[in-house]
Image (tube, rainbow, N blue to C red; front, side):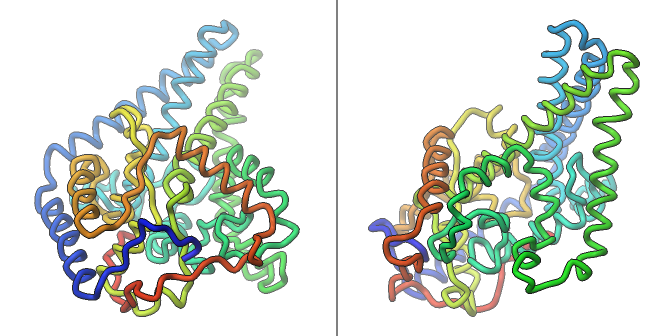
Length: 380
């Protein structure tokens, strides 16, 4: 683990087992309780997203009038945020497979994003959620371009950390699309570009489709006023990218979250997998609309514990999870968006510089539980 804190309380094997059983009980209860209210919720969100998209694109065709352009851009931005965060992300986790609705199938859903859904299901559902915050295995740590952990050896390249982070935020959908390309391994010569030909083909196909839709077809429908929907689409994509980046980074990298080495997580048991998810995640406090627009990833802790539960349930189980953490002495990281994002920015800037101790990071306390290879089921 990269940082020792006084609040990190090592647990005995017996405590870890009991801790895991309590969280398993929550998961079983919610799985058994899924029903019409959950189905109605996601269908209501989908209707809202589609309505916002239709309204947004329609208003942008009248974008020569400034109020129409502003309203259209705002509606389209909200539509794209809902599509990616509350619908796409959660549906592709298989949270609604139990409904047996082809439109909500985790294995078939495609989203409004430059990243092909099949590729995302591998890089996110499997790689990230199985190996959360394990340096060298979880490529979400820095997305291959940033230094986000002291366990990542410092190099002069990382002096540009704040610049790379800004560019990643602005073009986040493309950063996600290039995730599995492993650009850092390509740059080092560890792998060859030819090995990624099939992956590149899928990325190009999806990027071309998104580009034609947002920057050619819909603007062209406005005839001589094409510049207004073109600018509106570009702005909506920018808003969605920055929002997604902010929510995701605030859920993984604020002060108090931890990263792990592969050695520290060998032979992980179920309870210890839960323990790692808690220490490697953080929540955001806010209103119900805020949670919806974040895809309920404002409850990143609950999402990492239970990625296949309907996300609209995270709020109700968060109080129970927090109470369990308090009883076991495990830190439960939560704070407002401004505070969490401020600490993320601080970390990005701090890790741009060489570490005082050579960039090796602190080790886990000796009493930290050892682990077994039995993982919590993850929807893929």
